[in-house]
Length: 330
Ligand code: ADP
Ligand code: MG
Image 1 (tube, rainbow, N blue to C red):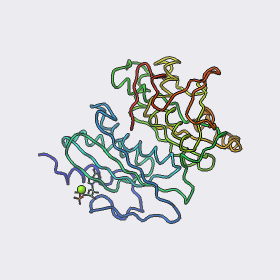
Image 2: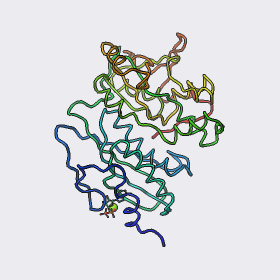
Image 3: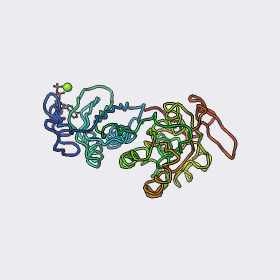
């Protein structure tokens, strides 16, 4: 017998994620009620994943559940915020129980890891589309913004960007999918790690922050533009993983790291006077980030390679377009 909408919600989404004492009314009534803490500001984000646009059709259901939440967690990480409550608007072609249970498990595991409770949502039928709204909080006036940088600030990125773009290439059959490196890269696309602990800690150090979803160069450019300045990135300093080097070679790896999408890493700027404290108190090798460049007066975002400037316009990625993979926007 086909699952009713009511049964589907009860079975897969009531109690999904963390149990939080501040959720007075969660899934099951007409709206959720949250006992909102004092002294903080609400931080809200929403992102939609459309089948065939943001993930290949036939992606593992657990990955779709994970990514739908991860992309929003990454937005809150970039604000230095702590996530707490999520709403899920789910459009499904059919109520396939094994798909639903994997999808819900993928989302629930990541939600529990970050103490996020699913407090409500909406379920409709139609082409597969997943929207998650995420609510969280940050101490009053403490949020990290894109706009706080200024010329002279040091520019950093977390993790090893480019891995996810290569992973997507593998998923789509454009890059070979065998071997340990390929497996790792595929996981980086299917199960990205939003940098929440780093984001919260960066409130004490960073002048500006953005999450890298559309490519490091473009997103660093967005941070710089919001800050009323430009950015200069040192090609040789862009961190790349061993797996990415193994899969596409050094040239390909740096290109994917600069222009590939779906990384969900943090790109942030730090005043020169605070860099020493940052490096001492949040050791880069432990926290997983690297200095990649500097904010400068001149607008735009350039990559410096061996002393020569390679410039890119925001739409001019073809100068540097990755050989074997394409990025897309989230
Ligand atoms: P209404 O018709 O009043 O909007 P629904 O039947 O759509 O109510 O939803 C009933 C309850 O289930 C609500 O609490 C709603 O937030 C929740 N809900 C519906 N779909 C989902 C979902 N996909 N995930 C989580 N909660 C959901
Ligand atoms: Mg409804």
